[in-house]
Length: 481
Image: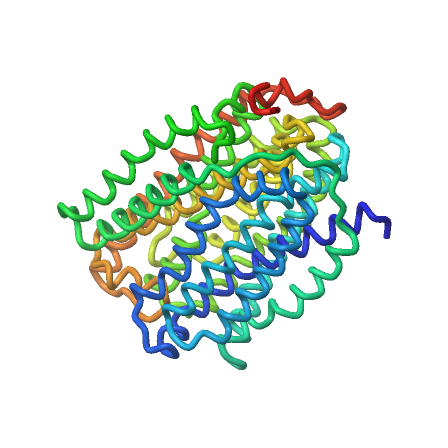
């Protein structure tokens, strides 16, 4: 295996580990609640804190990669992620577990922010789609392993080992990364501390306020939290236009293809990434399946997506991102529409069909869109642009989660909604029908958001895959100093 393929293998390992931890933790939450003598409202922050940190830190850590070496930051991220995983497994209390997940999220942010840039460093523009297609395989395989291993390890070994399993893999990946990954060039830039603080505060307030509205209804306190969080986005935007190295560089959005690709990623994440979350709530709460059985229905979609992703990546290399990425979002809309028609008697075959349609859509969108972003970033700013892509995608994931839990659970108490999600309670009778109405509303909103993403994808134009763009095409001259 040549060095370029070994580089891809290291990045794929990081992607796979992140995917495993996304699905494996969800299935173990009920057991963790009981083992640590905690409660649902505290343990749910094992998910929320992880998403918040990754959403906020990816851009700045991508910028650190530009400054101090993408491979160096990526390898350090693997090490931090591995240490955080070991601490999660050894957690004596719920608070210690949540804090350890925060450390794990920092490591994941370092890997996510620089993984795409490392691929762009080692692959020419006309071959990146295929490379990103293989990283999509890593994500889908990781998600499948998370589903399967989560049920097996939690049931037969113990929940702590869902974190311990990362340790030997992480150690091996760090050793491989130190020997294989090499940096191309570095550009020194400062970290936007003010922007990070404002964005983190804004997203945290929006998340908490919106989640509280889900079950408690609108109160002065939760509406104030949400309103303040939204209001903070305005000073954040003003600050980002003035600082030399912003968390989100709005000045880099002058490139049409880059702008449309980044915003399409944000809308796709916001509209679709909570689909599995809502579907599991439906399968557990309305249909009465166990978390493990419910999650297994998602496996066919992930499997097919893994098989199709390399082909779709090569397709994007040949014809550009616009057509395959747009078709991908349209297929996700079809899947969301099928989900919006779910009843208490919908056949499981229909649900599997929807997961397959959505899986193919994902495998069309991700490799094409990611390669379009990097094709329109100058080499010296791969880390920063990769970080922006991950930040917007993770912000979309967080908003998708908040939107899903808010809309789907407005008709039932908050405590019941969380218990359903964790598989500790089933809904029957009239309350189940009400919850199903909330599920339908959530998927219809998802379709609307995805429609905006499809338009953005369709109007992006055709990117150049044959040559690197000059820095003036993507990054203002003031940022090159």
